[in-house]
Amino acid sequence: MCEYCGCQSLASIDELTREHDEVVRLISHLRPAHEAGDVARMAQVARETAAVLGPHTRVEEHGLFPAMAEDFPDRIATLKAEHRHVDTVLEQAADGAVPEDPAWPDRLMEAMELLRDHILKEQDGVFPAALSVLSTEQWAAVDAVRDEAGGALPRPAATADA
Image (cartoon, rainbow, N blue to C red; front, side, top):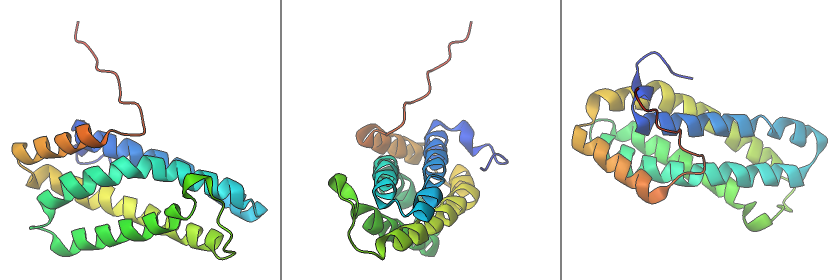
């Protein structure tokens, strides 16, 4: 995804970006399952996606977005609404459930298309803007939310200088 502005040099943005990459990877498993009519596989992918998005969304909504809401109120409101929509569709497959609603697979595919577009908005807009807008204290607050929320992906090992 985005690599032009240097925002991924910040650990906070790098971790959010790695989570985006994982979500895009997971979404790629949905089309074959959808075409095969494998709703159980789609539900499994939905649960895996939700596991990555849970802490990710918490970091954005409780750390990053509040720091940016004053400067970009409409953009942040839209992103939060998109989170709600995606979460609602994913929650229908929570706790091992395979949704019985015959319209759910198509709603999931639509929500994942929205999520892909949402990721691009964050990668190409929000993250670079955050680099120029957030103060050191605001980045510390984002990091504090990450520490509380954790993450579904392993953190990269720190490199030691020789």
